[in-house]
Length: 573
Image 1 (tube, rainbow, N blue to C red):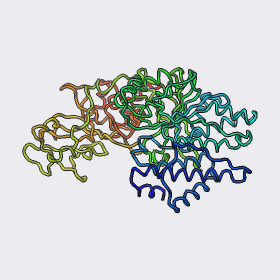
Image 2 (cartoon, helix red, strand yellow):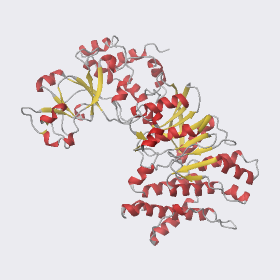
Image 3 (cartoon, rainbow, N blue to C red):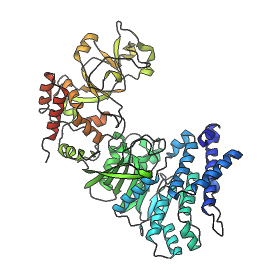
C-alpha cells in the first residue's frame, strides 16, 4: 500500500512523501518501544531530515500501526523492514543516486562474525560505516560493543561506545533514522546511564571527506553501487583504483583503505563483479597490495536476499597491510527463521598478477581445479584468437533488417542461433528478430566473412552452463558469402589466417563442463565478457591436438568431456 501511495504522486513529491510516511512509522516505533517507562524521551530530531508532505488520515493511521507492530521485533529486524519501506517509496532515480539497498540482519550478523574471526575486538575497536544508510551495521556493532563492556558502569560504557563508533551518510533522512535506531538499540544502557546517546552519525559526502585521526580498526558496511560520473578532482583523488568508468562500491572500497589503520579490517557487502571485471583491475591490484582478502562469502541465492537487488553478492573481509596468503571461501544460504547457513568451499590464492581476474572457488570441488590451472600460462591469445562483441546493435539499424534473402543481404545471426547443446542453427524466431540484414554503404563494417566461435554474452549462474558456444561453420559462410552478428553474441575470432587451434576444437573445449566450471570461478556477473574470456586458463596448443582429433572424428560429446577433464586434471596433486 505504501509503495502504491508513493507511486500515485508526482515524482518531485515522491521523496518528500516517502520521508513523511517513514518518519511517521519511525516516530510510532520510537514511542512504542518506550511503553512502560516513567518518562518518555523525545525522539532525536534533525531539521534537515524533516519531510514537508502531510499524510492523509488513512496513511497516518497505517504508519501508526506499522510502527507499533515493529516494536515487537528485534531492533535490527525492525530497522531493516522500515528501511525497506523507505527505499520502496523512493523515486527510482533517487534510490539509484543514493545506492540505497539495505542489508538483511542475518547478513549483517554474518559479516560481524567474519570481522570477529579476523581479530576485531569489540571492547576496544574503533569502527566506521562510511555509508551507514539506516544503521543496519551501526546498531549491531553497538550491541556487540555494549555486550563486551558489560563489566563497566553504564555511563562509562555509553561514553566509550559513542567515542569509538562513527557513521557517515549522504542522505540526511537515512542518517536520522540511523541515529534513532542506534539509540533504541542502546536504550537499556542509556536508561541506566541516565543520558542520551551523542550523535555518532554525520551527514556528508564520504567521497569528499578526508580521513581524520589514526584510522579505524574496522571499516564495515554495504556501500552504495552504480556507475557515477566523477568531477576531475575526485577522479584524480581516486585514480589509483580506477580503470575506465567509476562504480560507487569500488570508490567506497578505496575509501575504506584510506580510513583503516594498519592491521585493521575492512568488511564489506558488495556485488561480485569486482572479482573479474576489467573496470576493477586497478582496484584488485590495490587491494592485493594494501589489504589482501582474508575471507569471501558468496550469497548463493541471487534473488530474495536483498529487496529488489538482482546482482550476485558477496561478503568479504580484508586485512590492511596483511600478507597476500590464503583466503577462505564460504557459501551462504537461507536457514530456517531468516538465518544464514555458511558452508565452506575451500581456499584461494591471488594470482601472480593480482589485477587479473581472481580465481575463487564457488564450490569445494573447484579447489582442485584451480590448483591445477594456477600456473597454466596459456590464454586465447596463445591460440591466435581475440574476443569482440557482435558489431550489430539491431535497434540502431532497423531500416536495414529484412524478412527474406536477396542480393547484397546477409544472414543476421542472433543469440538464439547458438543452441544450448553447442550447435549452430540459423534462426530468427523471437519477437522483432528478422533473419536478414541489408547493409547500406555506411554499414559495411558490420559484415563478417570469416569463421569464428560464437558465444552467448549473457547467462546466469542458475543456468546449467554459463559458456554456450558454437562454431560459425565455413560451409555456412560459403553458402551466403558473409553474415552479420548481433551484439548479444561474443565473437572469438582469429587474429590472422594462421591459428594454433581450430574454431571447431575451440568451441568444443568451451562447451565442456570443466571449462564452464573454471569460468564460473572467474566470472562475477551475468555478462560473459571479452576480458574474462581472454583471461581464461587454457591447455597448451599442442595438448589441444587431442581435442582436435576427437572433433575431426565427430566423437560423442561425452568423450570430449572426458578428454578435457583429463587435460585439466594433469598435474593435480
